[in-house]
Length: 395
Image 1: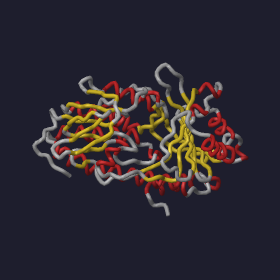
Image 2: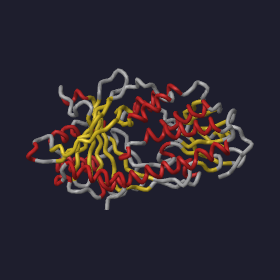
Image 3: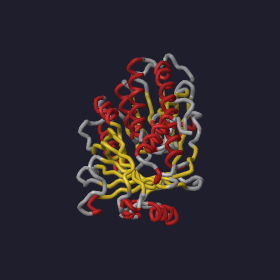
């Protein structure tokens, strides 16, 4: 780690590459520390329109609200249990409830969380819609080139997501493909008639050989109705350079992969939930992960998915992004020079990220890569399987 003991945090110029959840949260943290912050976000669209469902643990939600990163009254639906469902002809079209797992989650819309964070980014933060094409640690500072124009900063924070260029420049490596992908969809709950497919306060997991699906309700964006949100993990041969496919861009071949699994393995009720999704609403996310060797290298810091990238099974993408920002804010509050801030921020965030990546790999292996005989498992079997997977004691 390059040291620069003479550089104070307050008054320093910091660039944040990426204006998604991690970028907004980091901008809030650094502005509170007295930095002159510039955010570079390449998207010309409205990020709040990315409305897929996310879940935050109750304690994390309350921590973030108490810290002022978003309002406690942010729209969310409580989730008190997770129903594990397996196909069983004797159980009817809903399938057999094999285990009801207690939870303390708040389910919401990614766009709602982003909007709340964006509103809290202070007006003193300079926000540029621009594509960053170069980042360079100069030893006595850092240079960011955006839309062909270079700019000088004291520190650069990479908050540019799972394909982060800042991570690559900092020597953090590239994510590895997990061998499967996540098909997603969501739409207004009214499309399924008067009875929501998922009872209030519940999330559903539909288990099948070689994968599983989840389904739950989330709030719509302001002024819109509640939405059905579902996601299905299925094996997919190595996609090469395939990145996430936004709604409306999933081709016939990939849609057919999903259709075949739904036809073969989904109980009728949950098959209808997936089939109610239009092609314009269908999205696909290849699953990658990466544990980075460090979160701070010279003048370059990492946050959110630009740092450690855990598989979505952990449900910690948004949580980790805001926790990274909280950790950076705390380090800046405790230390007034960047070398001490880096020393305080780097080791615990690197270790936390590695733990989440390891957990995601165990969950992925258990729920996609090496699935058990779900139909043969009772409640006790599910509980033992889950406990051993989370604890890492599974054979």
